[in-house]
Image (cartoon, rainbow, N blue to C red; front, side, top):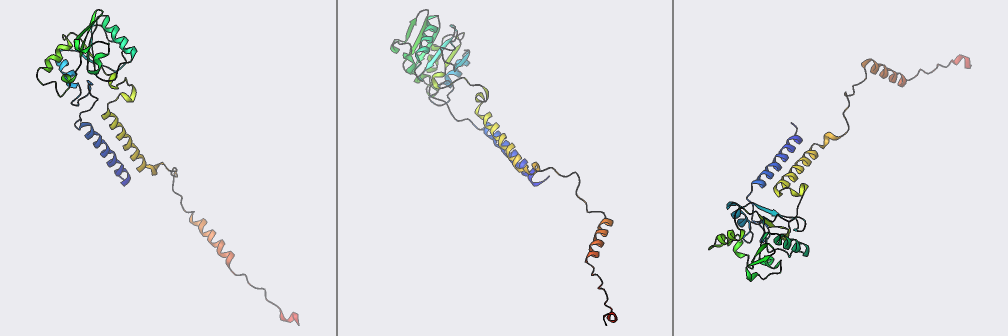
Length: 248
């Protein structure tokens, strides 16, 4: 094995090892505040896990509410985040009016125009539970006092599916490579770098093609004849003799 091949193999192996280490490295708390994806102290990942352990089917909705409205048998949970646009507020009102249930907490408690201090707002055949302070639902406070019990009470019986609206926290539906986890994307980038390093180190093999056989010297006889002809051309010619008697 040549040095170039060995170096390329070592570089590729090193990048793969780095990818594996990054994939197994402990994940740091990430995510925006009040998101069910967020594992930071202000996130709601613990609340989502609590609901799942209590028997709820927990889903996350990344699409706008006016494009994908859950079934009336579901419970929509919107906590803080950006203000819902008018079309999504209208879709949320239709959802509740058709018999659905919504939990609106924090800044989202006024999404339907109600007074958060009233607690429960009835619209049509459904209800919306308004919570003006979302702090008890967050990761850092869920285990305190009876916050976990109150959080489960907000979600209703386990038969109801819980749908966290994540579009208010900046999440969108993604397809293709964008939908891959960040660890997978990192691994793919490192593998691409390993392939590039291998090509650079082995690039000398991509030059002009080799001849089918190495050029050989001419046959010995032809060489000798060519050398004799060259010597014959360089041999001095005899000078003609002068007759002195004829000159007299």
